[in-house]
Structures are given as structure tokens and as C-alpha cells.
Amino acid sequence: MGSNHDHDHDHGNGHDHDDADRPPGEGRALRVGVGGPVGTGKTELVSCLCRALAADVGLAVVTNDIFTTEDAAILQRKDVLPAERIMPVQTGCCPHTAIRDDISENLDAIEQLERRFHPELVILESGGDNLTAIFSQALVDVQIFVIDVAGGDKVPRKGGPGITTSDLLVVNKTDLAPLVGADLEVMRRDADAGRGERPTLFVSLREDPLATPVVAWVRDALAAHRRSATAA
Amino acid sequence: MRAPDHRVALHALLVLADGRLPVGGHVHSAGVEAALRDGRLPDLDALADFVVSRLHTTALAEAAIVATTVCHLVEVAGPPVNVLGMLDGEAGARLPVPALRAASRRLGRQLARVAGRCWPDPVLGALGDVHPDGCHQPVALGAVAFVVGADATEAAMLSLHHSAQTPVQAALKLGGLDPFGLAALVAGLAPAIAELADLAAHYAAGPLADLPADTGLIVEIDAVAHDRRTDCLFAT
Ligand SMILES: Nc1nc2c(ncn2[C@@H]2O[C@H](COP(=O)(O)OP(=O)(O)OP(=O)(O)O)[C@@H](O)[C@H]2O)c(=O)[nH]1
Ligand SMILES: [Mg+2]
Image (tube, chains in turn purple, red):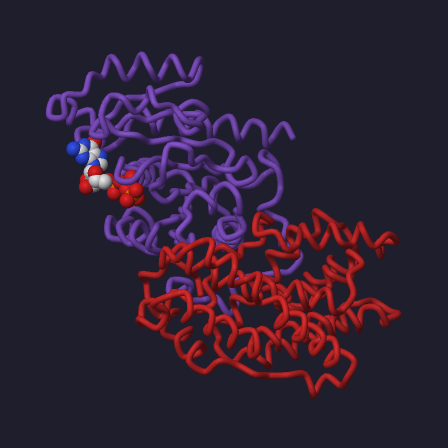
């Protein structure tokens, strides 16, 4: 718990406890989950999003790392967001439990960030996990699943709820395709077959550090969230 | 509202005893992560010693608060927040390590969150008014046990069961210990847990000042060091 310096008073007001329990679209921040296997570029993507959006969107980030602060430390080093807006949570050897089965710690982290900064967008990075790990609907409004080309072009075919049901599938590291002999067309075909209408974006965050298409997708999600908030 | 049929209370206790209930417990190791790192839990026997000593010290102190909370809520006539606040003070006084105190409030708050959805009751609402960071976990657990209609001994057993399972499940994940051996370890604790639950209920009938305050010194020192590290898998 070394990272939670203010844990003797990590809560502002007892009556606000249910803030993060509120259903989506009731005036609270849009919550975007970023999940996917180890090393596929989740932290890289989160820092791209922060870099692209921080100027005009109130932002906060929750990281769920295997070892508490690794991802948070990377984001802090990259200096994409003030350090106090990045909060790591522990996951007790089970990153998928923390985002799906028992989301208590993540809800707590979101509550704290919402209370302190009133962000418009909260990004949650899950710990690198397996293809079955998805975020609970009670934790995020939309989720992005990140896989990479380096894992081989079989990955979209393997499927799993992250690949088939995420709101956006990002296939990262297209620059590595020739090096690992991955066929992007096969990946495209298999992803589309498993995902139906849901979008898939191919990117190389190395070559496009602004993650242009993903940022555009998140901006659209944010606009939809704002509309549903004013309609509610 | 107390459940009229004890089978209903029993079902609620099963739900509460189930590790699948989302109460935030899976990120706590009860000192096992630190002890393993230190080489003090090489095998199942060492873990069994660790768990048994935990049961007789901090776990008994917590179970006594849980049982006392049930007893006091049974008797209280007015709004429960005063009695909950008083017991919250007793719980905090038995947690000298700031990191463990914070974790206890956090777990109490997380339990209140899920219990409030499962068994809506003004007593659970009052938990949120005790302290801005949440009520200490044993008080919250006692309040939930009261709401579902459990008695003091049953509530203490529930608390002791979690006190045993938390380190055992962490050891399973961190040390790769034999899951069947671990299951047998927990099952074999039945006589100890039954006896300690009776003891907790006994304390609950006495004055608050006499509630046990036993702790594990090494575990507490470990908890301070654990809290300062940045490479931990578990929060405590
Ligand atoms: N070649 C190449 N490398 C990339 C690309 N995107 C990210 N990387 C590298 O891939 C490695 C892992 O990236 P991270 O962003 O840390 O991956 P992650 O998914 O957050 O990893 P975990 O949190 O450990 O699961 C880093 O060394 C990145 O620099 C890319 O588009 N191309
Ligand atoms: Mg990462």
C-alpha cells in the first residue's frame, strides 16, 4: 500500500460513498477500461491518450499492475499527467479479479479521483492478463482491448470475451508484422468474424505516438457520454 | 429487520463466508506476503503455525469486536450510530499500525457497500456515518451479521473463518502451496475456531474495556515495512 500516502484519510465524505456506484451517464466521469495481455502496449496507449486529451479534457488514470506501481511509474516518468491524478491499486496476484469479480479497490480509487479532481474522463488500465479478462460493467462504461502483432496473427482467432465483446479492439505494433511473420489481413478477417459490428483498429504506437484513430474513437465516446448526461 | 427464519440467516452467512462475495478481501494477505518474502513460510506446517497464532491473537480481538457489535445492536433502542461509533473506537484502539488501521476502514467500507445492496437496512446506512473513511471492518461485519439475523457466536465464527482464509488464500497464490493441503488445514481449524468463537461471545457479554487486544508483533512490524515498499502484490 506504499503508494497510497493519504490512506489514513482517503475519503472525503461518508455520504459520497455511492458516487462510483452510480450507473453510467448520470453526470459522472466517463470510465474507459484498457485491458489486454501483458506487454501489448496498454500503458503506451494510455499515455498517448493522456498526451492527446489532457489539454481539453479533465483526466485521471487508475492502474492495476501486477506489481503495484510499475505502470503508474511509467506514466509518471512520461510526464503525461500530474502524478496525483494517477492512482495505482493492488490486485493480490489476480488482475482480472480486480477489474471483474471484485471491483471494490478500483471503485475506491475512482471515488477518490472523482472527489479530488472531478475529471471528465477516467482511464483504467488493467494489469496484463489473459484473453478472458474483461472489465465489469459496474466499473467501466466502455472498454478497449489491446492485443499486439508480436503475439502472432493467431490471437484474434483464439477469441475470448476481450477480443469478441470489447467496445474497441486495438491491434498494436503493426510495425513488427514483417519481423514476426504476422499476416495483418488474417488478423483483420478473424477479428471481424468474432466481433461483428464492433470496431477494430490497427495501429503502431511506435510510428503513430498520437494514436490518432484511437483518440478519435475515445473523443466520440466522450461526446456520446456528454449527450447522455445532458439527456438524463 | 432481523430475519425470522434461521435458515434465511444461515443462507446469508453462507453468502458472507464465500470468497466470491466482492468485499475487497482478495488484495489482502494478512502479512503472508511479507513473511514469505522473509523466508518464514517455507511450507504448509509453517503456514499452519502462522494461521493458528493469528487466530489466537488479532483474529480473536477482531472476532470479539464482531460479537460485541451484534450484542450491542440487539440491545440498542435509539439510532445505532452512537453504539457503532463507540465500537469503532475500540476496534481502532486495537490497531496500532496506521496501514492496518487504514486497511480495516477500507475493508469495512467495502463490506458496507456490498451488504447494503444485499440486505438494505438503516443499520448498514449508519455505518457510513461513523467515519468518513468507513467503519472498521469488525464493526461493519458485526453490523451485517446483526442485520441478517446471525447471533454473536455465528458472527464471530464468520470473522475467524475469514481471518484464517485470508492468509491461506494468499499463500496459495504467492507460494504455490498444495491447494488440498490448504483446504485440509482450514477444515482442521474447526475446533479452534469453535472455541475462539465461544470466547469472543463471552467477551461480548462483558465490559468493553475487557475486550482482548492481543496482536502479533512480527506481523505488525512487517505491516509497517510492507506499507513502505512499492513492489507488493497485496495491500497488506
Ligand atoms: N515495436 C513496437 N513496440 C511497441 C509499440 N507499442 C508499445 N511498444 C513497446 O512494447 C513494450 C510494452 O508496452 P507497454 O505499454 O508497457 O505494454 P503494457 O500492455 O502496458 O504492458 P503490461 O502493463 O506489462 O501488461 C514497451 O517496450 C513499448 O515501448 C509499437 O507499436 N511497436
Ligand atoms: Mg502496462
